[in-house]
Length: 124
Image (cartoon, rainbow, N blue to C red; front, side, top):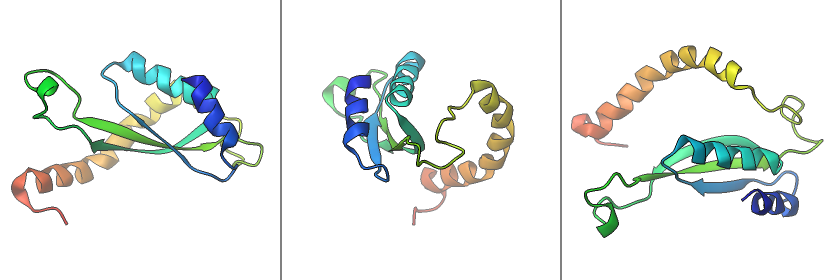
């Protein structure tokens, strides 16, 4: 996977945007994908979970099959990248330290979204 991601990074212009669509049930699968992306020279700039799978398909019925895949948006990491991202790869300890405050900030928006899509309101 890293070789394929590295080739994509190599052929994309330095100001280009790449998207990787990925789904996996295990934490180790996600860790492997993100490590391959970082090692291949990408900066991950965004992600969106999108419901891409039909729950009624034959192999999903009665199983814990995935319903969503994540679209990971990334850019090549180059010497011309933004100064704060060009050579810096985050540290999990920094994420853990910042996560409680971020979750606190996200909760009202997430609760409103859940309410809207659970029948409380119709989506815009």
